[in-house]
Image 1: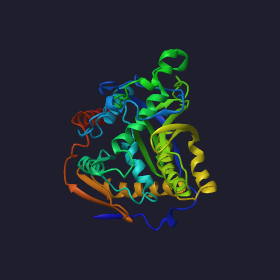
Image 2 (image 1 turned 90 degrees about the vertical axis):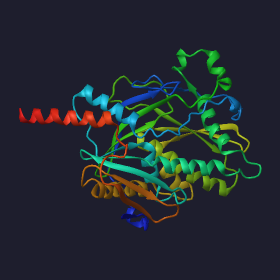
Image 3 (image 1 turned 90 degrees about the horizontal axis):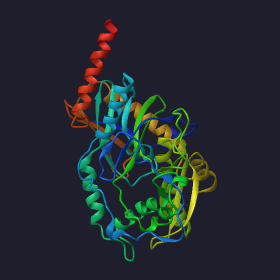
Image 4 (image 1 turned 180 degrees about the horizontal axis):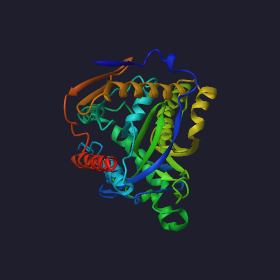
Length: 378
């Protein structure tokens, strides 16, 4: 078993490792039935809601996606595969994973209470990283079984508030193309988390190149037709309005994940909907993603440091590549226990990919390698 030490953090301080600006290289959508579509059909547009509003409204009709099935990296790999077929060349990266996995890794230096387990395999020189699904289900069951604090809402209701906020803020088309009736009737829309727009970006931290897939909530105006131009993405978040110094510190710690999630996909702006303890949305705040770490350091309690997160991620990914990237095949487990000062890495299967890679993707990559070999010989 290999161990990567999180503590002491001092070795990750200083200016941040080199960052390559995230660039969208592909996208995919899940439609209203959560069927995969290799297009941007589920792209949504931001328009602020009327306030105040009760975020609990409509909970009884919520269409909540059953995510108990293990989808691995399938949608991301299918999107990469189709892009490669179109471009006629391999999408090169040291690591391919979901944005959520990188968020857990980057937050590890300051997120003491959240543990995680991931699975990884190395194929054709690339590490493919996913969440350990059985661990995720066990964690979810434990969380949902906890009774709410006296006077507090259930975990399911508080999760619903986030989806309700998204429904209140989103339009299916730009504002000028959307009817006034729809805009003013968003409070009565049935809330569903089936449809999603997912961006696939190429980025890099330190010496490691990454391809990340992750859901993006909306675009501020319109998506540029020129792929070299950045998109004004918006991330939507809800948070309890801070009322005490303890609340303010809790919110500052929450900003850590807000920042990482948007930073990784190149989302420049976050809109936070502040709510009361009873779920009434009271006011909005727009945050510039790049400014969050500096504001935390200068104006807050400095409970986390963005440069430390970046440098930690760069060092960990480099160590992961040296540990896992030595050979082809096999499955590795990556685990961080709650409050643990280390991330553990060990091999759980000597051969195969443990279902991390779909058969279709492996077959395609083998075919592509064969074509590349023929071209080199020619």
